[in-house]
Amino acid sequence: MLKNKSKYVVAVVGATGAVGNEMMSVLEERKFPVEKIRLFASERSAGKTLEFKGEDIVVEALNENSFKGIDIALFSAGAERSKIWAPIAASSGCVVVDNSSQWRMDPAIPLVVPEVNAHDLKWHKGIIANPNCSTIQMVVALKPIHDAAKILRVVVTTFQAVSGTGKKAMDELLQQTTDMLNFREVRCDVYPHQIAFNVLPHIDKFLENGYTKEEMKMVNETQKIMGDKSIRLTATTVRVPVFRGHSEALNIETEKKMTAREVRELLSAAPGITIFDAPEKNVYPLPVEISGKDDVFVGRIREDESIENGINMWIVSDNLRKGAALNAVQIAEELVKMSQ
Ligand code: NAP
Ligand code: 12T
Image (cartoon, rainbow, N blue to C red; front, side):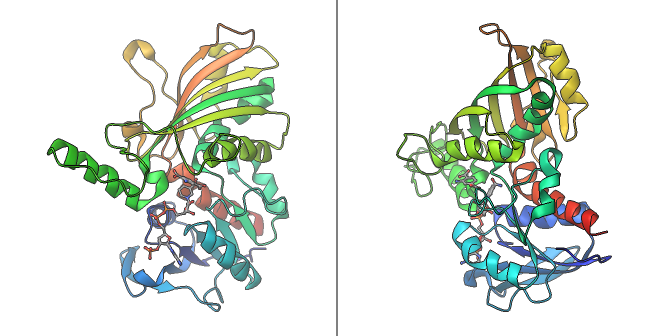
């Protein structure tokens, strides 16, 4: 449990990465009560400095004693690191908010999107899992609809930015794009195929059932966060040559009929959602427009005319903000509220 303090010692594990860097910005912007920040990354980065609130902070490598005196640790250094270090941190009395996939489906660990299931924070035992980026933005939009009309089934297709994979993937998209424009040969290191000027129906590893891990994360994490195993969901996750911002096309079937107008009104009053839905003015959410913003943006809301009770919509959010760093900091903010 987090102690009641006016300021906290906060660690960012994976501080040199795409998500870790964003975590530092979000902590600073939202004026999280930081007494002291400690930054961790691999041994390769130990000794480097990163700026937090105008001050240069030295990056450290992890060791068994690293977490002594730390109140909250935001982890974003990959599942293998979380597997080893999150339990060590938790046993030093530190509360861990973990961004990796390591603990998400562990029944003893809450998986939280504050707009949806902040109540699950009550039963944490030192580690809280932050969901997958594609799941987070989707459940923010699904929750109000589920409460109003009970969702029976969701069919989702994602269009995911390369920043979801990390810094190296952003460099690869930039490099391949410049190589293509200069008639040079393209090299592929991060993805199995060229991502520049291409679309890859493949995110994370393939599983026995023909789906990717990313697709199955969307199924399993949605049921856990919404606390409802009866929601049926099927996903196709696709990588597109976009730097920041995941887009998703959703088809939602509900028990109770909702008109497009009712859904628009419901979502515009819901926390964390902004509606961009004026097709007559070419207004709909776009990754380049919402990059760096906090909300989940929803547009193209319309009835599915092929079934009785169906809604189609388009949702876009910044995968490094709400999809990762912002959601983690919001969880930490909830923990602070609960401790007071
Ligand atoms: P990234 O840009 O590649 O950064 C990886 C970070 O991990 C770097 O700070 C790296 O440090 C650090 N690291 C690597 N090996 C380490 C080690 N042995 N010990 C300590 N630190 C180590 O990746 P990213 O996009 O920020 O993602 C990082 C994590 O966040 C992954 O677990 C990923 O699954 C998760 N993630 C979650 C979501 C989500 O859906 N919520 C979204 C994106 C990412 P160096 O710079 O020293 O190598
Ligand atoms: N492979 O947090 O490549 O489970 O975009 C998030 C993003 C895993 C995760 C990606 C990934 C995760 C990606």
